Length: 150
Figure 1 (cartoon, rainbow, N blue to C red):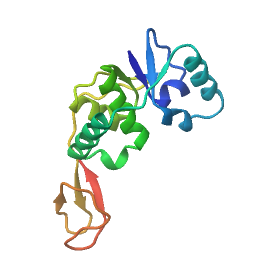
Figure 2: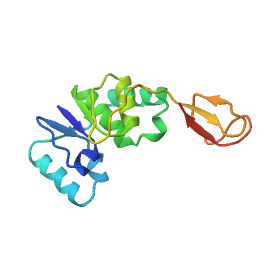
Figure 3: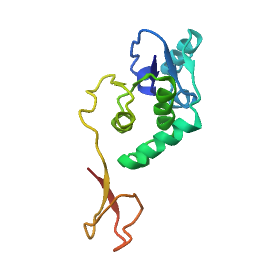
């Protein structure tokens, strides 16, 4: 079983065997890729709503890796669906691949080379240079902006 991200529909990625996705993916698609989504849905692709347990696991893993702020709820749902279905996640999104790797979810990339290592992110103040585990709009010490750092 493969769980398909929006990029699989946009890039017309060919997949053999059973497929699934989440409802939010269709909302990310336009024009021709919507037709491909509908055709695969009509042809047996499963549209899966992930369990709350898996959603919570993905959110925790994304927070621990520092990827939570860059993942949409649809991204979180896709990784959670792959967990629920014991499936391979099909995506080119590096943040999703990073979180999936933390959860031992296999990943298949579409056009880009997949990640080669898991990354943990921290947040660094652009003013005073201090680093923090949690993301915030501003540094609690000097008030400058924080940027995401490896």
